[in-house]
Image 1 (cartoon, rainbow, N blue to C red):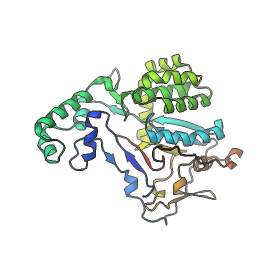
Image 2: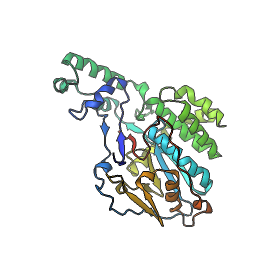
Image 3: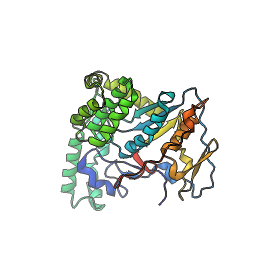
Image 4: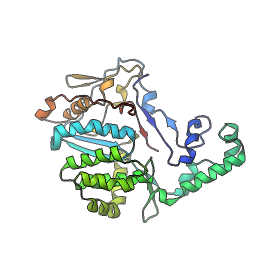
Amino acid sequence: MSDKPKFIKVPIFSAVLFLVLFTAAIGYSAYSLITNQSATQASTTSSTKVTFAPAKKDKAELQFYVMSFCPYGNQAEDIIKPVHDLLGAKADIRPQYIFDKIPNLVEYCKSRTGDIAQCAKYVEGGYFKDEKECVAQVTADNKECNNEKNFIKAQNGAFYGSLHGRVEANQDVREICAYNQAANKNDWWAFIDNVNKNCTSQNADTCWEEQAKKANLDTAKITQCFNTEAIDLIEKELALTNSNNIQGSPTLMVNGVAFPPENSYTQDGKGTVTIGKKIITQDKFRSPDALKEAICAGFKKAPKECSTVLADLVAAAGSQPSADAAGCATN
């Protein structure tokens, strides 16, 4: 199996989960298992020479686009943390979060929970045993989708969500607030690590506070930020994800350039990226040392820490597929 990137889309509503597997046949739900377009366009050989050479800055910048409970985004955070620990404030390493904006909830839900008028086709495709079952399921899914409690709502009537549900959207905002408030970014990283290990997209609304306290963060300030700044913060993230055409979590950008480059992946798994005098093989694209090399290539004058070789992470038994192979796709 090749290491070309794949992205997984999952439904917000558990009622339609089993239907996702059949989406390719008829397309009952807009949520589906998809292959990232870059993967289908990947070279079949390893002959393509790809060089990573971002424009240089006095202070190199890494923006990493994630969702708080995308497992692949969490794995990317594990890879990024050693780089942060090494470079510290010498590099600008900043999280960015992926949201959906829903101007019209009724139309949004209609496009994602199926069309009753198409039930005959759904039955023919094997989704349901009969039209009665189809009508009941689609109606229930649509009702659940239209439940405003599943989204963050702005005063102007717009709704905002995150791929894994309302709780994830809430946590995305809290993590932005925590990052902006943390004078010592090590505290933010401790918070992220605590949440990733101890909370889920179902319980984070009640779980996060203890994890923040353990990381020496001010939970009252985070809550105040959430209550007063959430919409503005989300809109800023949307502006960035839209302008940079972010397609999924994780997406890493060094000085505005995606790393690893899309065309560096090959179907035979033998792709490479040249960074300065170093050649990074495809199986190491998303390792701490490869990411360090990418960031250090973005400095006008690289700090001495760039000569340090960072060790690979040891995968835990039963862990998710590596972050260089998969991700959570945007809607």
